[in-house]
Image (cartoon, rainbow, N blue to C red; front, side, top):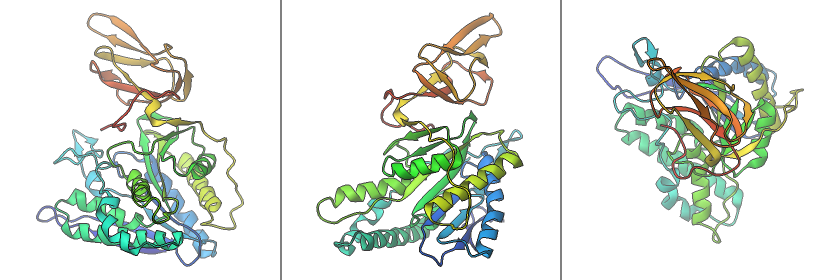
Length: 374
């Protein structure tokens, strides 16, 4: 294993931050797989999963069982890790700008499109190499021009991931079942991932808006394929997914150890690892459109109590919660807006009128446009 460290430019006198990428293998013919956790720095389940994964990778590398390269960024956001207010971590948005750390990644197809075109030909594999090389070049150039520490952080992460075959970004929700977000471009790998890790739901969308980290790897390939259609063959894109490892309180060694073992099963199924006895054995997850994930809002301010847990299958109109106003004793049922899976709930029990409370994923499109939360 080799450790590559990148020190971010000094944001204020007397301060410095760095991030590290641990690189395993790299000498074989298998795929390049990139994993990171903690981009939202208040979400710890994925961080602990990777801590349990690293010893497994250490052993696999020592035994010569790696056939691809596995890159791991165990803590992707040192800026967010340092942001605490009123004894609570504020790792989702950058404190100065309130910009979500997982939004607004650069559009690689726009940055690299012009330089890619003269390098393309009739060989899809050669075109893939040319595209990845151009991605690396433009990311390096953008790092040199980065104006803020947060932008430099995003670009540094891209510098390690932009040429990977598979990219996994580990997150969690507030209260939730294990689920994931992925592009529709590689359904066979989405299924393989779900069956490996035990995901209970896969939410699929080609372009969800916001240019989150996962989509920053899949959308450029689609854009390049559309741009050069009929002229140059552009191969299947990078597979990238956001893994939501349940809720913020699902942080324990037994669960993280099992999740890490499941990731090793996925690596083996991809061909990045050999000599691994386990095969993907979980049931395949329901695959539903992200636009079918209906948001549930509080009818008035008060205290939220839940009548259905995350993972419950509900019918449209079912009571899933109540909101109680403690001053006038008004108690209002909250109804499922669609039939589907109640896959996530908000963390806080107090709520304001109109606050988001939960999402129910169904098979009917109910939302379009910008589909990601802030």
